[in-house]
Length: 122
Picture (cartoon, rainbow, N blue to C red):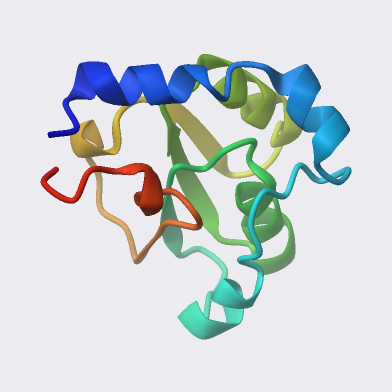
């Protein structure tokens, strides 16, 4: 079973921003999820929860292009720091927390490329 302690160990694999900055594009896009905004029919002022928000590229896109608010969760300290920096000035909150601890009310919940890392028994 994917305990919260084991999940944090998974998060440590992403605590090397310099490697991913060299490997990924300039937006730090790890998966393709931009089509998701149209599918969700996002509107300004809506609130989106992004489970496993990575380096914040989706968060930045949602806030900048759609005017929606976004809460992103990640279990990587380094991802959270880079995502916060990348999204400064936007209606984005990046939380360093396990998605199972996330509280709040959201119009939409998305996960782009994260759940394949979660044990199905979780």
